[in-house]
Image (cartoon, rainbow, N blue to C red; front, side, top):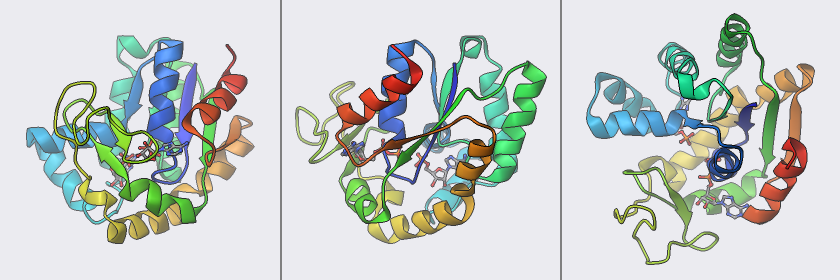
Length: 214
Ligand code: ADP
Ligand code: AMP
């Protein structure tokens, strides 16, 4: 099962992708997590990516596509995966379509987690991230057991640099300009499924399971 998650930044793609990966036993592949791991490790890719991410801009397609094509060619992705945060532009979607053609497959589901802009700033200013294991929380909607500490690995949680309100507004603009056209792209491909992302985490997940099957 090859699934991609669409939706605005902060819509809940990562939250749902992790639940999908766990229920269906497929890897969760997040380009944002891959970039953040590279930034933490101080790699060349990380240095390049950070300059774009901090401004709320997209990392250029040529840095992103090869990375994903390489990742989905790994043995653990043979039975499918859930891509979170990729594709984000039409050229990235075309790159994925071409790569899947070569690997002999196609996207089975493009799940659009639909949340209006007015909910997004709240979601993102309340998001807390663990930069060690990738877990995410929300100070109100998905609080960690102990304030400021990751339930999974005990690391201190942070407000991501790009989740500050001034950057969030940039990211929303970039989303509308560059990523929203993918809704039409995957609708034409006949694989688009839209879920109401304003409901609770569990309700959104039930809707997704209704689409993917038990
Ligand atoms: P994305 O991966 O789309 O950027 P996240 O999954 O990280 O978004 O979610 C953004 C923030 O909103 C996180 O703090 C998360 O805990 C919270 N969140 C996710 N889904 C919901 C929901 N259905 N209701 C309330 N808060 C949510
Ligand atoms: P995310 O964790 O998905 O919210 O991504 C955080 C940031 O990483 C984005 O705002 C972009 O700067 C960068 N990024 C993640 N995925 C991509 C992608 N597919 N294309 C370009 N930039 C990306």
